[in-house]
View 1: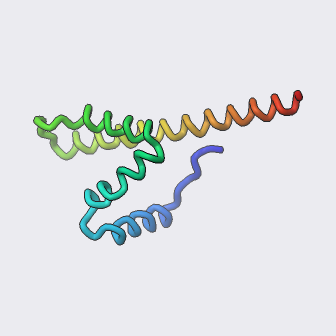
View 2: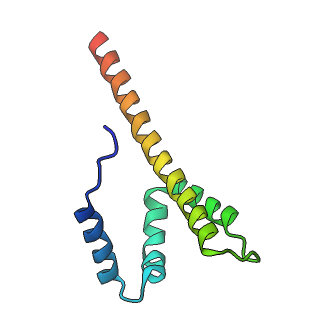
Length: 103
């Protein structure tokens, strides 16, 4: 199973729901949900947190283009992690099915 394509309508609905759930903004929404995400996906959470720490040093200043590029890097790494996990699960299921057929 590959990552399903996300429609514009779905993306807009999710972002709208996030805004409705936290009228204080994206940072507030993030802080409200980070702990739950870390519990559900600890390796993914900590990998992304480490990438953010690596890309955005507190003492550095960034122009909007560089900050955007670094943010896109983090998003692409996240996408690759999720895609790879799905592919690995597919392979595990395939081998599991083959070994069950041989039994």
